Image (cartoon, rainbow, N blue to C red; front, top):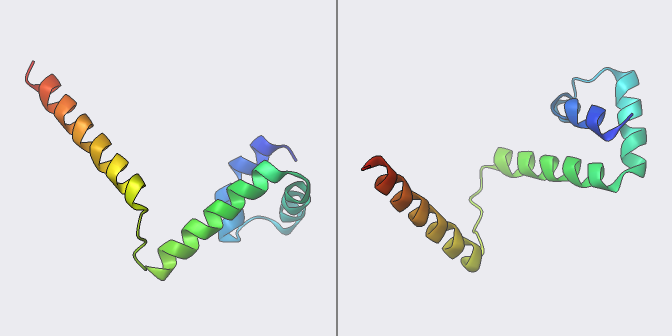
Length: 83
């Protein structure tokens, strides 16, 4: 299995709806491919956080950058709409 094939079936794998034979191939690929391991791990963590429904506090520096970016984009959008 190649990375592209794994990524194409990622949702089904995480949901547990992949054919067992394909699942075996999937897991064999994961055992040897660090980038795919990271992707699958991040997806699993995201799903877990979502299911738990607990708020997640963003680091202050990230939150400030995010707000500044949103403000800038909002202003740009308003200026472009006025043209």
